[in-house]
Image (spheres, rainbow, N blue to C red):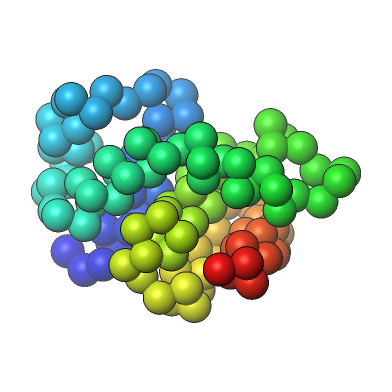
Amino acid sequence: MNRIDERKWVIKIIFQNEFNEIDLNNLNFYINENGVEASKFIVSSLKSILNNIDEIDEIIKSKLQLNRKFDNILPIEKAILRVSINEFVIQKHVPTSVSINEAVECAKEFANPDSYKLINGILSSVAKDI
Protein backbone atom coordinates (compact mmCIF):
# COMPACT_ATOMS: atom_id res chain seq x y z
CA MET A 1 0.00 0.00 0.00
CA ASN A 2 1.42 3.40 -0.93
CA ARG A 3 1.43 6.51 1.25
CA ILE A 4 -1.61 8.04 -0.45
CA ASP A 5 -3.67 4.92 0.24
CA GLU A 6 -2.39 4.81 3.83
CA ARG A 7 -3.41 8.44 4.32
CA LYS A 8 -6.90 7.69 2.98
CA TRP A 9 -7.25 4.88 5.53
CA VAL A 10 -6.16 7.20 8.32
CA ILE A 11 -8.81 9.70 7.20
CA LYS A 12 -11.47 6.97 7.12
CA ILE A 13 -10.58 5.72 10.60
CA ILE A 14 -10.45 9.25 12.07
CA PHE A 15 -13.84 9.87 10.44
CA GLN A 16 -15.19 6.76 12.18
CA ASN A 17 -13.77 8.01 15.48
CA GLU A 18 -16.20 10.92 15.23
CA PHE A 19 -19.05 8.44 15.81
CA ASN A 20 -17.40 5.61 17.80
CA GLU A 21 -14.43 6.67 19.90
CA ILE A 22 -11.40 4.50 19.26
CA ASP A 23 -9.63 2.96 22.25
CA LEU A 24 -5.89 3.42 21.75
CA ASN A 25 -5.22 0.16 23.60
CA ASN A 26 -7.02 -1.76 20.84
CA LEU A 27 -5.78 0.29 17.90
CA ASN A 28 -4.08 -2.54 15.97
CA PHE A 29 -7.14 -4.76 16.37
CA TYR A 30 -9.38 -1.94 15.17
CA ILE A 31 -7.18 -1.28 12.13
CA ASN A 32 -7.10 -4.97 11.21
CA GLU A 33 -10.88 -5.22 11.61
CA ASN A 34 -11.14 -2.58 8.87
CA GLY A 35 -9.14 -4.83 6.55
CA VAL A 36 -6.03 -2.69 6.65
CA GLU A 37 -2.48 -3.74 7.39
CA ALA A 38 -1.28 -1.85 10.45
CA SER A 39 1.65 -0.09 8.78
CA LYS A 40 4.01 2.09 10.79
CA PHE A 41 2.63 5.22 9.07
CA ILE A 42 -1.01 4.37 9.82
CA VAL A 43 -0.37 3.42 13.45
CA SER A 44 1.84 6.41 14.23
CA SER A 45 -0.56 8.81 12.49
CA LEU A 46 -3.60 7.48 14.32
CA LYS A 47 -1.86 7.51 17.71
CA SER A 48 -0.62 11.05 17.16
CA ILE A 49 -4.00 12.37 16.02
CA LEU A 50 -5.93 10.69 18.83
CA ASN A 51 -3.42 11.85 21.45
CA ASN A 52 -3.41 15.43 20.12
CA ILE A 53 -6.98 15.81 18.88
CA ASP A 54 -7.82 18.69 21.24
CA GLU A 55 -4.75 20.67 20.14
CA ILE A 56 -5.47 19.95 16.47
CA ASP A 57 -9.10 21.01 16.87
CA GLU A 58 -8.02 24.28 18.53
CA ILE A 59 -5.80 25.00 15.52
CA ILE A 60 -8.76 24.40 13.21
CA LYS A 61 -11.07 26.57 15.34
CA SER A 62 -8.54 29.41 15.33
CA LYS A 63 -8.63 29.51 11.52
CA LEU A 64 -12.39 29.52 11.04
CA GLN A 65 -14.03 32.67 9.79
CA LEU A 66 -16.38 34.39 12.23
CA ASN A 67 -19.50 33.11 10.47
CA ARG A 68 -18.36 29.45 10.62
CA LYS A 69 -18.62 27.20 13.67
CA PHE A 70 -16.50 24.12 14.31
CA ASP A 71 -19.59 22.04 15.05
CA ASN A 72 -20.92 22.83 11.56
CA ILE A 73 -17.89 21.40 9.78
CA LEU A 74 -18.73 18.03 8.27
CA PRO A 75 -17.15 15.04 10.06
CA ILE A 76 -15.27 14.07 6.88
CA GLU A 77 -13.89 17.62 6.59
CA LYS A 78 -12.74 17.45 10.23
CA ALA A 79 -11.06 14.11 9.58
CA ILE A 80 -9.18 15.44 6.56
CA LEU A 81 -8.10 18.58 8.44
CA ARG A 82 -6.99 16.57 11.47
CA VAL A 83 -4.87 14.22 9.38
CA SER A 84 -3.17 17.01 7.46
CA ILE A 85 -2.51 19.23 10.49
CA ASN A 86 -1.10 16.23 12.31
CA GLU A 87 1.26 15.56 9.39
CA PHE A 88 2.81 18.99 9.05
CA VAL A 89 2.28 20.63 12.46
CA ILE A 90 2.37 17.86 15.07
CA GLN A 91 4.52 15.08 13.59
CA LYS A 92 6.27 17.24 10.99
CA HIS A 93 7.05 14.21 8.83
CA VAL A 94 5.30 15.31 5.64
CA PRO A 95 6.17 18.50 3.75
CA THR A 96 3.46 21.13 4.19
CA SER A 97 2.71 21.51 0.48
CA VAL A 98 2.41 17.74 0.00
CA SER A 99 0.06 17.38 2.97
CA ILE A 100 -2.16 20.26 1.84
CA ASN A 101 -2.28 18.98 -1.75
CA GLU A 102 -3.23 15.47 -0.58
CA ALA A 103 -5.87 16.89 1.78
CA VAL A 104 -7.44 18.88 -1.05
CA GLU A 105 -7.49 15.80 -3.29
CA CYS A 106 -9.06 13.72 -0.51
CA ALA A 107 -11.68 16.41 0.03
CA LYS A 108 -12.56 16.26 -3.67
CA GLU A 109 -12.88 12.47 -3.41
CA PHE A 110 -14.65 12.06 -0.06
CA ALA A 111 -16.47 15.29 0.78
CA ASN A 112 -18.91 17.76 -0.78
CA PRO A 113 -17.99 19.42 -4.09
CA ASP A 114 -16.95 22.68 -2.38
CA SER A 115 -15.29 21.15 0.69
CA TYR A 116 -11.86 21.37 -0.88
CA LYS A 117 -12.09 25.18 -0.70
CA LEU A 118 -12.60 25.11 3.07
CA ILE A 119 -9.83 22.52 3.50
CA ASN A 120 -7.38 24.49 1.37
CA GLY A 121 -8.23 27.79 3.09
CA ILE A 122 -7.79 26.49 6.62
CA LEU A 123 -4.63 24.51 5.88
CA SER A 124 -3.03 27.39 3.95
CA SER A 125 -3.73 29.67 6.90
CA VAL A 126 -2.19 27.16 9.32
CA ALA A 127 0.85 26.81 7.06
CA LYS A 128 1.46 30.57 7.15
CA ASP A 129 1.79 30.40 10.94
CA ILE A 130 4.49 27.75 11.04
